Length: 273
Figure 1 (spheres, rainbow, N blue to C red):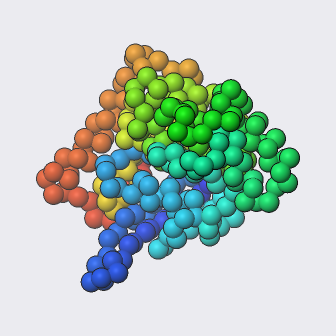
Figure 2: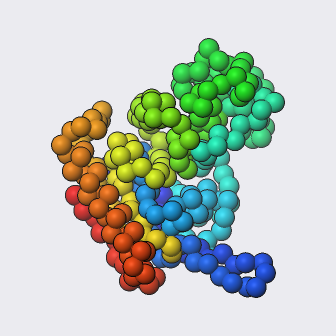
């Protein structure tokens, strides 16, 4: 594995309500390192802070405690070095595919001819060269997500952050997009943090799967996914690892059900095969 790209060091996040002053601890003492070119998936119970963590890494939110470093530089706000892809695509309906993908370079004041070249290259990378002048209303869900990925790539980020990007797609389209994403990742060597509720998707895509505890979100366990690409859902090693991770999540669900949630700081990160 390559050198360390991202360091999340004992990060905590507390939200304060504007009325009443009530506080909610979303993340506590969360630490993780991600290597350059590594694909890491985050899974955990609903409300465990997965999206909050992604926003902190993106610089859209500020941590209440701890630090985040990208290439040894502290993350203090949004930056072109971190590209974010949402589940809901977030495309501009008044712009065609090329216009949407060119938006980032436009904001960065890249000259028109160069930003069009960048946009067309990224559109070609995601396989939408034939749809370059179509508008979002003319695209399928899978095509819209390809545009969203191309838009994130257009700024040439060091790290790609993906928040359940395929969650709203039908099963067949989701499978196609998973394979498309793997192709793009292997061709571009970007580090990726991918949030998903699907254990199967996490094992299919990633080098490591990070299981988070219920709120406040902490690292419960980290599973290494050692078998090579391309992967088969019916492979014995795949099934065994999927069931291990599912069991780990089930333990967390039982703790929630039985009111036995761990207090912040009691759980320790474990690396398991």
